[in-house]
Image (cartoon, rainbow, N blue to C red; front, side):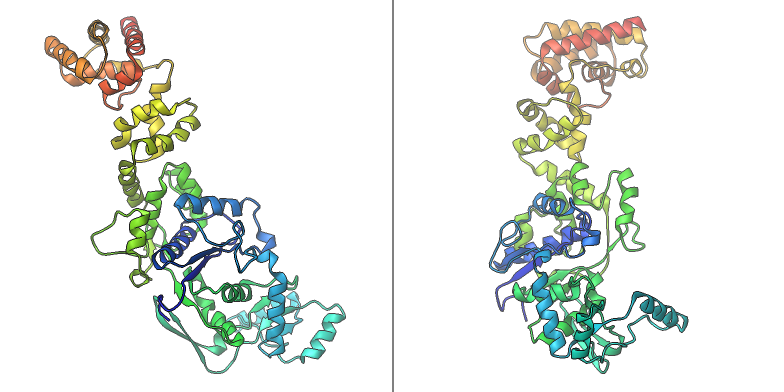
Length: 496
């Protein structure tokens, strides 16, 4: 089946057992791009049947992360839709009904094996160097006998009765046909002893009932893809287009990236979790651009995309199954590019929370004045208060060693501060047009280097050796504050 033959309906089906990471974000993005390109429907389905691993805050973090990336859905727990409920914990009876159907038609069976027996069976198989698998003890128990044992209170699970002869072939859009011998496919548990269906049954039932046309998911599901094919075949249902995405490798390219590495990454200002990336100063456009290109490419030249451009360019045929190393240096590059592409008012609003998080009371009007002179100088939103926090300080506290410029002593730098104060206090306004010519004349008069004179002035006014353009900064700070800061620096230098 091609992507044009029927309405495209895709689902992103996260499990609220942890945080939304790059792999989940990319899976959601590709689903979203396909739907927007083909005019279909995007479904958010929460697969929350694993109650033991359930994390209370995870679902909201998933939703927040998707929204931050610019991804929305047509049907879901918060929106409803014609094929709900969209939370698996509310669909238990549906799965039980279909599990019983498989039993009635001979494609599943009740298994009464204890955990102790299964553990011993696995130990012996490993001892014999066999691949661990269920040995089929309960496969042929008559259904009526099994139901009597259940009625008597015996604990059980439901297993899928996998054919043991022949082969199973499934087609993945990226990898072509995948063929396995049926004897290598285990009799997987599809319903646990607590009555909850496992992914293998629940996802197949939901995908059918919700009319999912394409299943785009991680490569970790490839080993059980033949099982999913057999379950759908047992029900007589059409298969979706299977698309298993590439694996993310560690930045070194050695080994699969896992959640465990995030603790080390965060020390370097990186993370594999989306909400962390937001807090670390990355813009959603950059992250979206970055993860889109880890497993997909338009051509060998184009690499900067906004969401609209990604939608226009996206196609399943350009997905690549090869493993992709996570390159944070590339993310930093994309972040700088996308920050520079933002409108001034938009960027000002985005950096405001970072100033507030650093303890500054940063009003939006002032930020809109600051933004044009720092936009080219920041590679992350979190850098804005570090480079421009002095605008919102009542006073700055420069270090004496920063005020004293290379090749000069404190007395010479005090003289620069004194003369600068005299020049700037006589101006009608301190800005680039009025201030810079006068200060360059002072450089000539003192027969010094511009870096020496402007260095004293910069540290005096901003408290920093590196700052946004000096005269534009002084204009925003205001003449009275600028003069006060220069006077304070002059006193420090004279007292040295």
